Amino acid sequence: MKKAVLPLLLLCLAPALRAQEANTEKPAQDYNKWTLELGGGINTVANPLSPGYDVSSYNFFSANFGARYMFNTKFGLKLGVTYDELKNNDNSPEFKTDVQGVSLQGVVNLGRILEFQTWTNRLNVLAHTGVGVGRFKSDRTQQYYDHIGTFLIGLTGEFKLSERVSLFGDFTMNNNYSQQRTWDGGAYEHNLKQGFDSTLYQATVGLTVALGSHEQHADWYIQDVTTELNDLDKRVGDLETMMNDSDKDGVPDYLDAEPNTIAGVAVDSKGRTIDKNNNGVPDELEKYLDERDSKSKSSISSDLSDLINGGYINAYFDFGKDQPNAQSVSGINFLTRYLKENPSASADVIGYADEVGDAEYNKALSARRAANVKQILVDSGIDAGRLNIIGNGEDSSVNKSSAFARQTVRRVTFIIK
Image: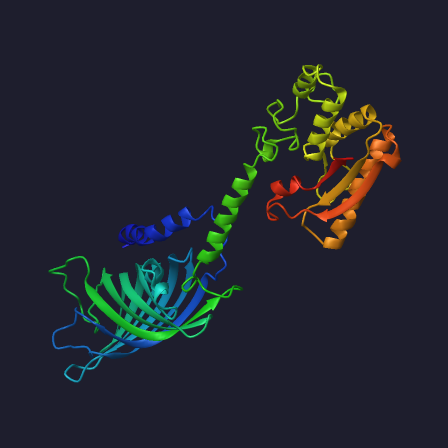
């Protein structure tokens, strides 16, 4: 019998094992996986019976207890224990047979596979199949015992009473093999043995109780599609934001070490302006200015002030910080050089913050950022009287939910007067 049980057990468990393997790398789900089941009802059997003996069409009593574990919302395993009583009908000599069995079954949640949730959240159907072993004792003129192997298949209908408790109705067919005695305890002749020697039918009703800390059980759990779509939309939005190129230098912001380079100047692969002589002026811009020596100094100065006033020269800040980051050196150096070459010019130093946090706090933060940049300019040799501090607070011109976009508004910009 062991040789027959093992292949059948592997066969009935294959769907559940495959489902478990497919979900090993998925995150834990917000549903309960364990249930306890208790039910009772009626049973009847088919052959074999001894000549002259017959069984009642509906025997009371049939009882079943089950402990079930769901790997996911569609597949699980069930350990079942059953007890059945068989009795003679009015046309048969008296006998009474007690049948006990234990089984291991694979469970398929047909309600989720067939998407019952699209039209009901109260009804569900489970299919189960597996193998087991049993023992029965027959009382006739004396007691007779037999041991059997069983292949089971059945359907269970569920009606949800609450998130924890469900009413179920189950019909199971037990096909038995290696049976040595008839159901009434007589000797069983195997003249026409065909593999399965007899069948026991069980019809029971009972309650299913879900165990666990989550609100719903796997039988009834429905994934929130809206949440998934929102998460997907956010990821797409973040990807689009990552590909933004604020300074139009051909390097996306998330790869750009200097997201504030002057438009049109050459940059390296990390988006940094090329300044080989380290004088704070991009080489391409410096070359352009040198080629315009024929122009008056005032014309060149006007071009530079247009660059500054146009927002191409800025100092940038990390989140929550009031000191400019290292990538802002070139912008501050550019303004310092301009003010030194144009001693009659003055500048507004205007600070900004992103929209994350309290508005009043961000207002004060923007003012501190402007004050700290002013101090750097003063320490670089610019008279403090030529610099006017303005704290403009939050800049709401970019997508607040994008961390990359917010980098471009945490800044200090300048207006030449």
